Amino acid sequence: MSTIRLVDVARVVRSKNSGPYELTLDILFKDRTIYEHFRDRALVNAELIAKLYGVSAADILGVVWFEPANAVKATLRRLVPSGAPGDTDIYGAQQHGPLLDLEWTQ
Amino acid sequence: MPSTEMRVLSPTAILGYGFPEASFKAGIDRKPHVIAVDAGSTDPGPYYLGSGKSFTNRAFVKRDLRYMLTAGRALKIPVIVGSAGGSGAAPHLAWCQEIIEEIAREEGLSFRMAVIPSDVPKELVRAALRSGGIEPLSFVPPLTEAALDATTHLVAQIGHEPIVEALRDGADVVLVGRCYDPANFSAFPILHGHDEALATHMGKILECGAIASTPGSGADCAFATLSGDAFRLEALNPARRFTKESAAAHTLYEKSDPYHLPGPGGALDLTHCSFTELPGGAVEVRGSRHVPTVPYNVKLEGARPVGFRTISVAGTRDPIMIASIGEILEAVRNQVGSMGGGATRGSIHFHVYGKDGVMGGIEPKAPGKPGAAALPYELGIIMEAVAPTKDEADTLLGVTRSTLLHYGYPGRVSTAGNLAFPFSPSDASMGEVYEFSLYHLMAIDDPRLFPGPEGRRTVRFSKGIKE
Image (cartoon, rainbow over all chains, first blue to last red; front, side, top):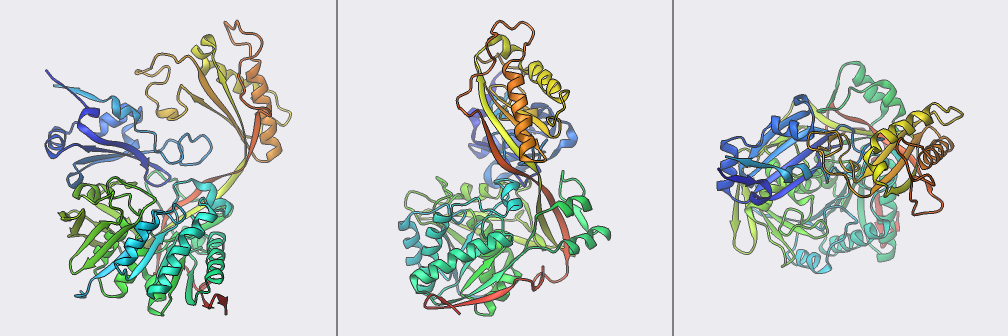
């Protein structure tokens, strides 16, 4: 049994608006080997993101693996569109925190 | 495809963000064929589009533009500014044009400037809406005529086509309303026969200045050279370089799908793209494709006013209050709602820092969630009221503030007041509030002419004097 913590294997973990109605999460892994480990096992997937952020599957637009940057991207619906009353993060740049707690035991 | 190379200088990520003079000079020393800059974004929120104000600083926009315009005239190369004034609607365009005219006067410059607005007449959108020709983007509610009527500024992200036409007509400076960010950079190469897909992909990276280099920066220059079936990216600051990964990673930025990047009239397909590192911190990109869509779609952006905002900032250091803050705020909201007397129109929002102030409803560590964290020893609370008029927002906020200050929650031992206010006066009017009302696709006929002749003009300057 070993534990992989995302903060140890990713060099970038970030969130940002993708337009005013979507929030997009990027994880850039440190190298191709780690990227392939995660991609081949689909360790990041729509169910995980939905659970982590407490939203329904319908709120997840998609999860895309992007080899040129050793990256995976997940995009979800913003509960409140950017800048509308009740929004908490106009740029969506501080919604990545929960990802930094992710770890996998195998 | 032309055999000659084309060199493109991008001074900064957004006009007004600045750049080191040394980087700009290094770019000029490489004899660019065109200088282009993206001046806008929807990222700062709907207020700027809705109110007609710029989110960028006037003095720094002027500072950046002065470098660009004087260098453009000295080298006799075009200067292109898109999404003028931040949001690209008529008042933003006029604001940026005024700055350009000031610089022309102060520097005694001579040039022809094409001005291309991108404001879309509401009646055009209404007709499209009635015939089913308006399509919402993901998670965007369907457009209604009421939302359209309430919209103060309505623009389309136009493509490179009208910029190409203006350059073909001999414009030295092209000032564009809201436009697809890469179009500022791709237009001149496309005019000269370069591949649209490569030129657009190059523009997609250049529009963010040096953000796609490493270490990235939104306040530094980037340089690209298009030749044949590839383009090469270089940083102009010796402290930065482009790497295979930094260039590739950039296509992830602010996009939902890094392989397919939709824009006006089509999408970039990067499925077969390759990134190769060259000596000296450069990266060569090839294999970008462009897939046109039929009909030609543009993205509409609009914002509408939803009232006025008044806020108050406070904190609490009481562990009993902190333990039941959710219930307390809900009770205060209900009590204020039941009071009437002009305090009921509008909505109250509590931003509770230390609980879920940053993430709101998706905070997994908020009390009551499966991953709930231990309670903090203090909380920051921003009380916010949004109401149809400023007076009503002031009233609603004032009543909310005083109710929370003295609310007798169960178990309270601190009976002198529930809040620590850092300021007197405690309340601040934040002015008008807007929300996005349009973020939809609309099909158009001729991208060179859209949205129409209204406001398109050529302005000539002779030694700084407007003719």
